[in-house]
Length: 136
Image (cartoon, rainbow, N blue to C red):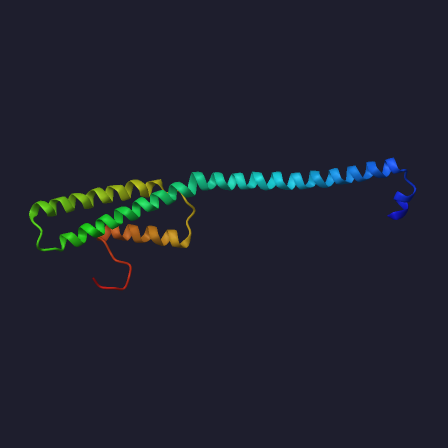
């Protein structure tokens, strides 16, 4: 390698060095551009799929909390008929909210998310079930 540059003039050595440096810069720029395009695609996926799904899951969780709260209120024997009617209406509204946001979910099914949906479906069919082992 040393012999090749030894017989070249200074001008040709400088030109070869600049061409070599230009090639390195070009390779680094291409790697950066490819990485940028890949990141852009992934951010687009997050913005269009994951974030709306996260908001929908939050709203579903909020609806489940409302159902659970109203269920517990209905177990209270001290409330009157009007309060019972309000709690039943609140449960119906919460289930409607859950159904609307459940349809918005567009994510790839992972085990945890699949279990969440199965639990949600089970709650909708047979009433609210607590998932922890405590017996309240």
